[in-house]
Image 1 (cartoon, rainbow, N blue to C red):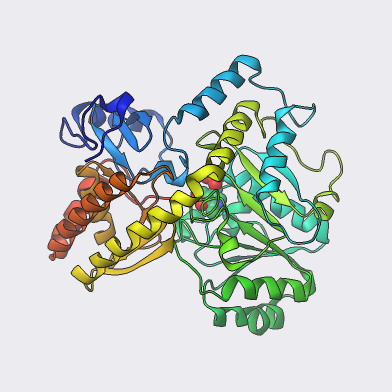
Image 2 (image 1 turned 135 degrees about the vertical axis):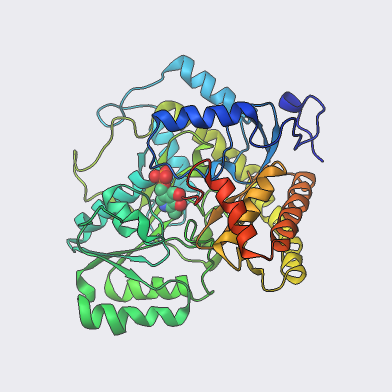
Length: 457
Ligand code: PLP
């Protein structure tokens, strides 16, 4: 059991004082459903009101242990004191002035700080564009790739997720439902198979032979480790092979590290694990500790092809988000990236034991650092594990077809990790005991009664 001071006051974490969801959570879910867009997928009925480190307090006063981090976002934990202090200080100084039209002092500082931790192809220092989210910097990269190369076509990967605005959703191919009813999508986007070195033959044998010439492809956009598509780690030669392919054909390699970046995999960027330098790297989520920010880090010669007005945003690089980002980068460099590596090494053998304990039910355990996916035999089983974990006070989130992701804040301690893994193991035991499919479906339906259960992004 773990305890965290401001919220817990000596209570263990998790500590459940009501059934989950509690009465106030149930009432809140009802209220929410009356007013909010039904497009929000909602994984399960968690109503968080406070957070500290790994601890979430819900609306009923339950303390929960967070292994989901607000969809792999809260890298520095909830309300890290240094992040809070930076936000407060900046809010007192200046809350907004658009960096699109004026010169915000903190904006280039963040660009420099991100550029200095990001290995980009070519010898020059990269330059950086700031947006407010992952999808915004994916859009920026699509525009830059077409503009800088003069080529029309873009390639993404089956299983990839890049966001929900028109360009990024066109590139997304993790689940068909993201496209349902929205066609026609952005023209000129193709999807390649992901992950195996032999899949790279698709480019020469299918794309370039039958569909479009290589010299008309502007960019290949890849998640070095797929996120929403299932926490899928490619074979070791895959990313280096892609880099070679891009070099051969003058195609830009864009690494979407919105989920895999900012230290989560135990290196600052996942692509560093294969010594691959992209031409453009995208980050968001963990880089701002939960404040809305995204960054496109690009080869200087590419970005310098954009003239004034080519791209911009009223809020991108908002000073408060920038202040949180500067502190986050310091914290990542000063220990959190290393902690992700150490804690990942602690988690892997424990999770792999689950596969030994439940053969045929736990199908695969994969990942790097604190980006770990556990694949189950069926989507219903993954659903049941997620629900059983929630009812024990452990927050995890599904991904892919039948996987559950383990993505705690990077500040997780050895003890907190051990507690979470023990609870996760119990949740798997419970879901594995549910041999009969109708019981599994019952569990999933119970979770679904509070909204659509299929978690996303
Ligand atoms: N790219 C990747 C790899 C993501 O995982 C996500 C979101 O999960 C996005 C882009 C979109 O980011 P956002 O939700 O901030 O728009």
